[in-house]
Length: 366
Image 1 (cartoon, one colour):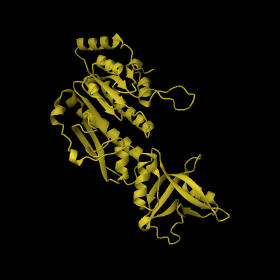
Image 2: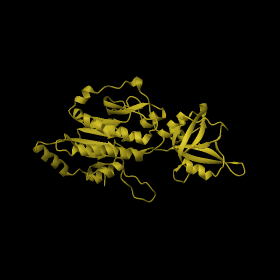
Image 3: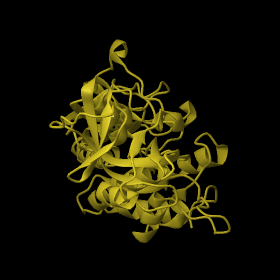
Image 4: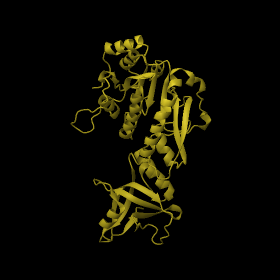
């Protein structure tokens, strides 16, 4: 199992010495991945694991210039009451690949003395982070001589912070991308080694976009890794223009509510941004047989903006057409809800939900 602070086995250094004697010594790289807490820890855990997979596969080549010397991730967590702590997806992936458990570090904080001591023993030339979610102190950053580089899912200096992809979708951007940048003490403000743009489809959701950007970022990292290890990347890295920086603070539950006094496009972007966590929520009114409203608290799973709806009727009434609920919004726009979820129920289609109403009138909550 992963551990945080135990003496490192001498076999690791013996192997390195043997490789050096044979003239095939590889430079030590340490990978750090997985956010510590929600909102989207589970999904980003898997994304971090995909980056680690890319590194381990590349390092296994006989002509590779590097080897993954250690993995750093969050401590094991108990997902359900009474169950034993489970390793993060990054740690589990590393173990499944046969990576030594005593070289998987799981500090609560990256500034812990025992962890920093272990990291120094590994003698990393370079540290690589991908959705690590833990503040790296200067004492950490001073250890690897080639620095620490981060795969960041945004075109820096845009959307610095905890939720760059979600905030970009919330803003309805037509283009985003991924940056490979050096890590400094200021928030996501280090010099950019390389970046790649990606057009944003109007239907893409946060988790899918994160997956795409981290895949692009992994390839970008491999393309630039030799220049990072030989130091030439520092010469070409471009400082960020702080005057163009925008912030991307973490998402919170209060933001996830849909209010239909906004235009449909704004609400659709919110559904895309909150698709991973906590999903968007809305309150509707179901008129019962007595003509009195029952409030329905639903999660809105997937939507699109209607481009052809010309229904006329009660401005608060929700209609059904094709396979979607049609919700009237501000500016004479309509939001099509295709999937939704009732409390304690599984995700269902709008058609199945509508059929279950048995003709009862459905209204926006006022």
